[in-house]
Amino acid sequence: MKEAVRYLENAKELLRKSPIEGNRYSDEKHVKSACGVAYLGVLKAIEESLLKKGLPKKELPKKVEEYRKALQKYISTHNGKLLKEFDDLYDELHIAGYYRGLLHRVDIVKGALKSAKEFIEKLR
Image (cartoon, rainbow, N blue to C red):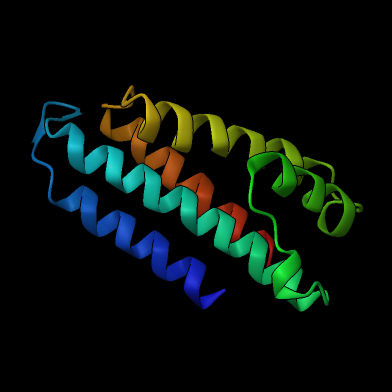
């Protein structure tokens, strides 16, 4: 999971570039980038886990629905919570944080990154 953790560290570095005013990040660009990179770290963790389970590299997921199916089939058979956590991370990091730029509060953004880290650690 070294690569996934590296993505997460890069996301934190991007967040450090944004000034904080009150409890809000004032530079949307850095927040959006950090959320996008953190989400990529989540995807990388899933890919690394699938490779460990013997899935060939050419069969790795390419779309979010394929990641969901792969999680169900190969990873979360014993832990159904992982799929729900992935869905939450998709909604929070990718959609709200990166795509729509709706996340601004420091505690919310840091909480989303913490959730990404916990998800990655569960895949180890």
